[in-house]
Amino acid sequence: MSLMEILFLFAFLYPLVMAWTWMVGGLWFYFKREYQQNHLPEISEQGCSIIIPCFNEQAQVRETIRFAIQTQYPQFEVIAVNDGSSDNTANILDELALKHPSLRVVHLAENQGKAFALRSGMMVSQYEYLICIDGDALLHPHAAIWMMHQLTAFNQVGAVTGNPRILNRSSILGKLQVGEFSSIIGLIKRAQRTYGRIFTVSGVIAGFRKTALMQVGLWSEDKITEDIDISWKLQLAGWDIHYVPNALCYIYMPETFKGLWKQRLRWAQGGVEVIKTYLPKLFKVSALKMWPVALEAITSMIWAYVIFLIILLFFLGLVVPLSPTWQIKSLFPQWYGVILAVTCLIQFFVSLFIDKRYDANRFLRNYFWVIWYPLFFWILSAATTVVAVPKALFTPKKRARWVSPDRGVRGESE
Image (cartoon, rainbow, N blue to C red; front, side, top):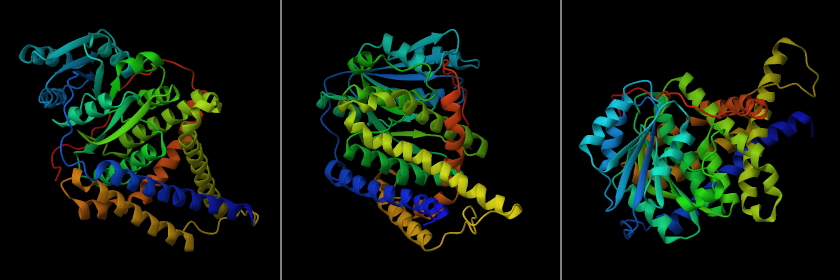
């Protein structure tokens, strides 16, 4: 078998194996933990603090606060942290605080980054349990009930992650991401929970036990994705993370290529950063449950470079004669491409079927769009990983500050 045949085999086998791994784990989670959850769980007597870090959120923060205030939970507070916004966010928050007694506002003089804003909100919170959402996220009224049930019912749970649902669906990128969050991200989280460890909580909606956060040193201020970092810190310290699909939160996602590229590059860089930081700790016996998650993350990075090499050699061969060892005759899939395509269709069907209860039963509509997902997002994922690895490995440590993201085209959302 030649080198190119080995590369093509790896490029084919990795997504094939992972697709079936996710489907098996996801279905196990669904039938064991989710299928019969048709009623709200028993409401805990413990209170919770909803923390909302905000940076230049004037266009969205009123709606975000309104949804948070309407949380159907008996005992809670809302803490909005204005992280040195340069727009009118501070004034809007002060105005809302006068109208809503359950809202408290913390102002930071300068932009310190999301991790620091979360730390600040936690320091002034009065409850042991925290629910953290983004400044443009819309919290479902029952999300706190579902998340608090998991946090209070299981003493070893240090964090829970909710189920983000995309609102903007007026563009092709928006429609593809609707399918992605259910058929890819939701299925992966279910599978990872089944196999023991979750790669990351969702930064847009996550719940935490304050005791666990204090034990691991809170959120790291020098990590570009504080959600991935805190997930690894907690789990390496022995805490569990649960995925709570009934804890819904509605979000806006990028609908331009530039915005999507910046978002996915940040996600990829954050993943590489945690592997770089915590790889030495994985060799301890106590970290055994993290090995599958770490192995999959490292393998995905290798896969991205293999895809990049195959594409590079193909186009190089069009202008420069290459030896048979390095020659790529075609990028079009052969028999293995058909197998992979069928597997993708099965995966999308399974995941959208599991997830349809959370999306107004738009099963067929979402399925039509998600089948096109691999054509664009696999290449995007590989490209961002190739760029992210050297950025994460060689960029000096500094405080991670945020900028306002691309939140898509507002208006029509089906």
